[in-house]
Length: 214
Image (cartoon, rainbow, N blue to C red):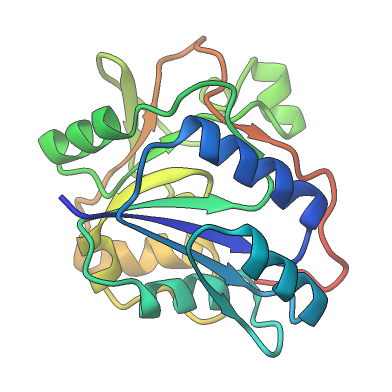
């Protein structure tokens, strides 16, 4: 089983330093590691080349989140499983990557996400991301599934996800999910954990860069 880590960044070094340190501590070994830099900042790019233990690709002009994912999917080798990490997430404990892969395989899931802390008023009032989820959840032993949305929060996904049209240019999670469902209407997405479990990843990105875009 060949695996890859994809790190997406738009130049927020203050977050990425923490994310990479946490990944080194709590993520497993990957056969391939790729960072896509959408900062269009030469100084940041040089720092990333020195810091990141893996391959780096730098956009000469900002292409947005969608462009960064499209670049990653274009340059990734033929791996079986990908772990996606944006530059503003850290992990409070070891990530059970192999177990997440096993559950995806056994249930034919298009991804398995880590549950983050509540990040909006609806989630906070409900008591958590899953408790405030805007669509029906199906509970299982140790995980939940849903058909609502493919998420770019820290997650594991199989190689076949990349084969259904790629990431839409200028599109976000909603657009990709709709695109995927056109050819795979039965595609489901998982969250690792159960109602009431503590978060498995922490979103630390209190602010976006002024030039952020999809």
